[in-house]
Length: 448
Ligand SMILES: Cc1ncc(COP(=O)(O)O)c(C=O)c1O
Image: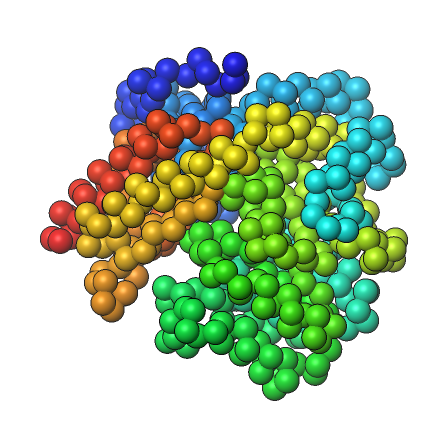
């Protein structure tokens, strides 16, 4: 029996007091005296949670929500999976941290991880945040190739340290991009910057990268860094062939392919790793978020042929791969396998995509929908012809659905869907009907 089987589907969501309720407000106000750096998710809906169980979350006012964000793509196996919680508790009582010394549990995790990563990806270094793993990947790429430059993509997200920021969109808060980092348009077919159409475009966006290599870089590109499927940008799935063509380009120029799977790994997209959808093996991959199902554990993994560089890039950190982290990650992988959760995510994704297409039919402000596994997006537009992003609607729909009991992720005019991969069709359907209700009410408010 699944650990969450005792959740009564008829009783979720259960909103007793309009959220954010009085206790939420009080706690949040007290915390906000000291802390200001909230995500837009919290700024737009400052509810205060105190419990998580399976695909549900409970706030301090006694409201129960369906979790459709997995705590920002993290708790993919649901909150507090007993096997993962017990694994963490065991090491919380015996050995919490011992720098980067080998421990038996770390050895077991490394062996397991190497057995499930595609191809020869088995040079592994463990970290405690996605960003740190990405930074290590950049250093490793430089060390392997002896080259210094990087190419990445518009609207990809890789973290918030200087190197990671330099791979993505910059603004006033980030300051200038470090030198040697070049950005190119992404294969965002719904809004192709080249105004072309797939497949007749022959993936011109990849040909364009070659132009950038020739015209803008010194020709010393260490790696092309990409999210196989964009998360933060709004669950944007590349057309088939895009990643494969980039792999060829990398091989032509002796550039490493670095797949940042911090968000897409561990079954989220219906396969253990999203790159598997494209039958492409990167040279470097980063894992995070769902990797420890809530415990901070991440990894930078490099191809067997390059793994000696891990000994040359000062790779260790204070907490990376501590025994609790290793136990959480190992237990999480075992759960995915034992409960056949990649398959579940795949089926849920297909099911949700069918419903999303119907939602698009029924609502003019829905310009595009997409879904792969438990990673979906609803793109809102003011007009289907102009495709003008409908940011105001995105905010309103997010807040309305949250009030009705759906804990989820906003992304401006793109509504992001990221339920735990344990979710059932029944619960997914319920969540999508809450979203549709919120879309309907918002359309009416804006006079559509
Ligand atoms: C693709 C990707 N890479 C890296 C990161 C950074 O991970 P962390 O927040 O754990 O530092 C994120 C976080 O959202 C991400 O989505």
